[in-house]
Image (cartoon, rainbow, N blue to C red):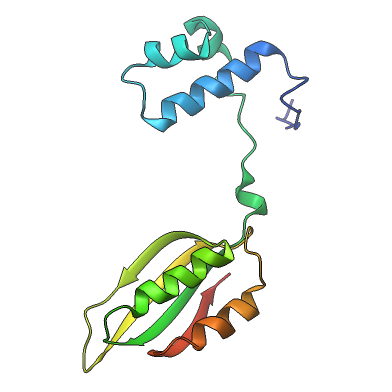
Length: 144
């Protein structure tokens, strides 16, 4: 029989399955030194954990999140990147990565990847606001 996946709300799932997911989340967090510590904190036995661990997964929000990567060319002036980050933060963007190159001939290239699913404004409006920051010479949408 082929594997078929179902999505079940945590509130109606059997307790053992909820504990397996909890234990897996505890293990991936890195806060627990040993697997026994994580299993103890999740209140699940080793045998139950190992029986279900390869078959029970938490539903990821990843498929509903929107990740955007923007490329900037900025003047080499103190505070421009900070102004950009404040605008993004105020709009509700969640910054994932920032890559800033060393300035050459008075300008620097910066790439910012972020989650935009919780932004209070649309991406187009955000890019318009970012273009208005003094020292922002160019913005390109690299990926979405």
